Image (cartoon, rainbow, N blue to C red; front, side, top):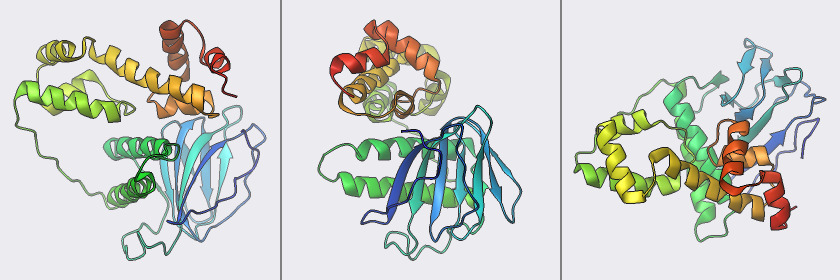
Length: 277
């Protein structure tokens, strides 16, 4: 539900709080500082984060911003571009990161596109785990949040961790990628980047992918994302914008077009027919 003021933070047993905040045009935040540190991950709107001892930080779509504990700050939304964001807060002294000495001591925006993209993926997975009643979901959620913190630390200290190239056969690499896509379909990607990572020509990848799935790469990606979106629309009360983001759609109007084309109705009408509020 849209809010005109900051939401209260309540930590779980692991020292984690995850909030989804949709600002109204009347949103106001007073100067504040916390005893915990947090990550802001935006998926809609524009604005600024003001700090008492740091330059103003501009924030926009897909921005990932770390704010340390005891850092005086406030958020200001751009007029008529109210923010929608996820806020992951980490309780100081929680066992999972109590002994970590490299947690950043000043605010910063994560500029490395690879790290920012990975954090977005973990945010999506964490949100999904919070709604799934499955064995190990809580530990998996803790693991995801811990990975987010590790990537924040890595970005702050400008580390790079090279990944080893996969040297298996071409068809095996495509099959492995298709299996992984069942879990990572929400991650923004392009066909050219996939082909570069797998070290396969675009023509050969397209051929093998269609043989295995019966669809083009983008068609299969949309199928996976829309399947998940239909499930969330039918069985949750989350906003349509949040569902689109979680399923991997970068643009809300694009999500509406694809959903209507695939189902013959709008997301809102689909939700009503499914009986979800």
